[in-house]
Length: 236
Length: 236
DNA sequence: AGGCATATAATTGTATACAATTTAGGCAGT
DNA sequence: ACTGCCTAAATTGTATACAATTATATGCCT
Image (cartoon, helix red, strand yellow):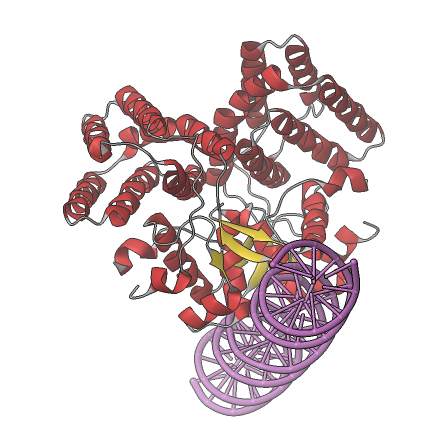
């Protein structure tokens, strides 16, 4: 688990401990243990991680910059609650950037990276079989981030990281589809395109995959979900 | 000047003072008063703005997240020095995102926003006539950001903000072209496309404009430039 | 003189204390 | 019982003090 959550994101933080807090909180958000709207009290987070408010604030700021956390003046930090408009923007941006990223990945991906992608899919299926929906979803996100890393474009990778994180929040709020395992096929198709180095196919498969994901959202309902910080982070 | 630098960026900071420091530093970087590699000492910045290190660190972190500042552990914050590879990535990302943004702007821009764009061009010409090259360049960047705002897409706008800032650093390091006023034509052509609501033309003009900009770089040379923090911020 | 080790100074990393602001609860009045 | 205000508690914003690390200068040895 540490290897999976270790390099989830580069938070541009000089401090090592703040980076760890970022990773833990990000993983919790990606796994839907921390739900949109949850308050991230500085004292509470600090106590959970054994750090002072100084370093906690740095971590929360970093998460705010990637769109996962919203900081309100004199009110504190909360897990972001993307509006339907935000959801629209997130998937519009993903549909622009990720197909291009997939095209680059098809051109540059290595054999070992391909193997890593397959490992991701296996782990995702495993989590699904174990009924750990949150973990499966987080792994699905990691899959997209790994593709961006294989594209060897630091700026795109950072953008994808942020968009994936926000997508996770959007899904937590608006996902409403019966067939939950629909993603697997697209992910396999992506690997196929990468293996044959078919740039255009990788581009198109990624695009249709994102359209498919977006169509699984129900942007009419807007549930008010909040979770407990302490139990979301217990044993992680 | 305050109106121009006020809303240069949303730094996701809850504090008002840190945001002001971000704006000032960002403006100084965009105007090439602060050059790549300049050290941003916490004490020094704090004294210049009359703030404690706590708030200065928050500001520097925010700038690090937008790619304008690089924080090195136990070494401090420096104005970023994009490598030639970084420069390539920045303009590759701009070439993907900004044409799409221009297309959206052509669809949604209002009359008052069009007027604002023309005002920008006038101010840019004025600065050029006055020999204030740095200010002209900053205004040119603001022009692109204003377009993004007119596209009414918060995520794209944030991306463009960050890319423009990094472009300014790239230009500071690698710009090496004789005819410096080449941009004006493209900017006028963009306004024309917006006025006629010609989405495809806006897209294409923006793309060729960015290719043109990129072709003005000389990525062979890598000058080692640094500037003084105090004089860069005097009377601003 | 040049290079290396050590000591000193300067700078960043972190914790804590205090100020400012918001939130919650209680009390009086209607 | 409900509304409004006022006070107290909790939380964030900021400054400062101390610890850890890095940079600099000094002196010694070859």
